[in-house]
Image (cartoon, rainbow, N blue to C red; front, side):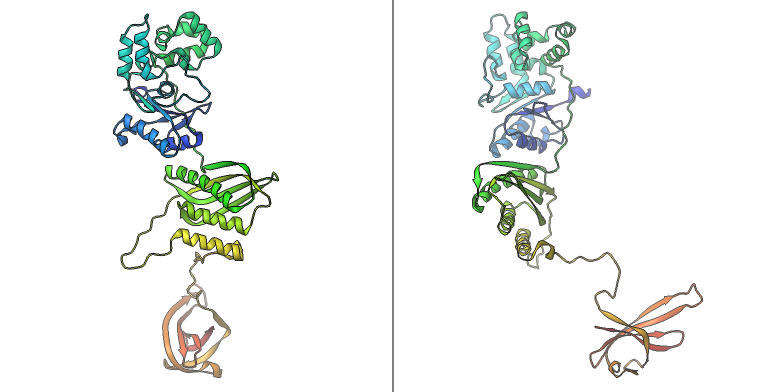
Length: 448
């Protein structure tokens, strides 16, 4: 079986274009937006098994749009063109597309009735069209290999023809796509050019136009144009909440959460107020992010009334943490993020941070050791230290060591030392070393 026979393309029309694109990407990584922006195709090969068949897949797409508060029409077929025809004509109980009259264009569900009622068309195509499709509310699935039968009864107006082409087909007496498909392709191409050949191929179910995936935007964003300027924080936060909810839903559709938030406030003066919100941990909690934005806006109000806003979500992978059976849970990331934002508002962002372990090996770094410019000669018997400095003598309370250090063995002046840390009864904490070659003891430094 060739690749063309295996192709299964879904088409989505209607609804909000950005949200429609995110919905499609939640079901397939191979998504293309049409040139006019009115349709979106997605390659659904292998997806049907996850939804108990293509009918379940189409119903899941329609349901996903309804959960987001908008409607979409879905068509699934073996080619992009037939899938779009199925989506546009298979409206089920939905209303006609805004700005477009239904006119003579019939749905796929109405095709069989239309064909049977037309005197010069036999009843056989009606039965074939009914067998070629499975339809539900808001979706139509064309059975594999039945693209030509499924669209044969549709009027040629479904091809979105130019006025000249529509008049030509009317003079030729071509009322349905089935009659157009019956014409020789070469003759149609000779009279109507490449566009005519394309229309004839689509009517015959021979559309082999490849699906060219549209690059996926890395950072989804939502724009809100306000009806009137806002001077207060509360109504601005209300508008922000809706935009954040929509961005969060689009991030969730690709399995991501907020890693950071970028906010642009459009001001009445014509200027823009850009803000960037860095999160302490990846978050999906919109109320927590809204609280952070409230702190940012209240600590540094915009210079003029706000006439619009744009929210952009920088995606990040959600973190998973293993809980302990015997230890209390740590602070919630959203609460910690709000605390950090409030601290930054009080003392400045540059004064708030977290400790970082340097990528280095310095064993003495946690202690402040003042090295003596010249090691001080000492007498040490393992219990008491004697030196010429009265501050650096006394009985030992604690002793640690030895730590052996060798060096210079490749040169003419090698050295070998044994280092000890000694705490004296007077409170002094010293570092001693013994020169192995001479057995002499020295005070190397003093810990602060």
